[in-house]
Image 1 (cartoon, one colour):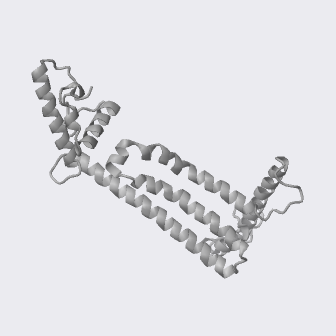
Image 2 (image 1 turned 180 degrees about the vertical axis):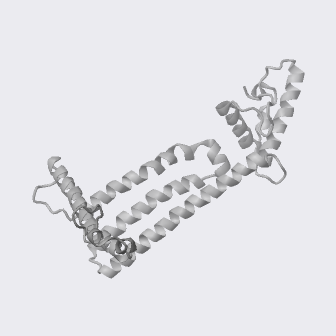
Image 3 (image 1 turned 90 degrees about the vertical axis):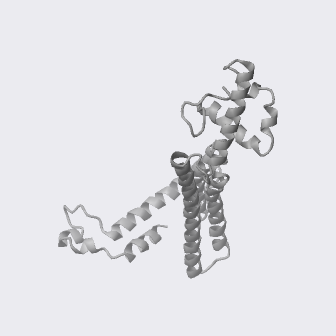
Amino acid sequence: LGPLCKRVWNVAPVRAERDLGGSQRRGGAGSDTISVQEMGKQITKWLDNVFDDLHWELVRLRLRRVDASTTWDFYILLSGLSLLLCALPVFNLMTISQSPHVIFWLGHKPQESNLLVPAVLIVIAVVLPGLKYFQASQRVVRVTVFLLFFTGGVALVAGGLHVLLAARGVSADLIYHCGTPGAPSERVELEWRRLDEFHRACIAESGSRSTKVQNCPGYVAMLAVPHDDYVSYLQSVETDFSCSGFCRFWAQPLFS
């Protein structure tokens, strides 16, 4: 990886270095600048130290002999980084993506986007050792690694943008067009009005304003398909966020 970093740095023209004084370009005494070659050497040295530390740590844990080959250390480090990168998407998958409010408005898009991260990293973790096992040529390795990271990056960016655009659309609908005809929130607002009318009639009949809608006679019939999903969501909004009404402010609570 160190030589690769050096090649990447050497490809780009270092114009700023040309504009420096002679002593700075040569890295003379008193110069604070570091040449590209020196930077590459430092990166290589740092990576060597990382792999050495990894080797001796495995020896200390009795997972490797002292004279064992360190060929696979790069893949061990890659696996550790992959697990680290998967931590946040997996956490979001198990928490935020499972929220009934997120699922109601965005469906399974966030879950699919979070699953893309471990999926891409698993593909990388399988392909890279495969290239080594089949002893692919340097050109094949270069092209394969480029296509692997490029397609994986494009997939992750596309998945993230898909969720972002969907979330922005839902946000604009709820803030600026809540309940308007044709908006996604129209169906929820109509369901809330239906429940509110039923609740008002129940209160007028019972004479008690503290009567909750779920305690009203005939409430079970209000849960008939396709109303059940909307009623359940309105109840979760009111109980989870203490939010009464949907597109209206200061509406009388239905379930609490």
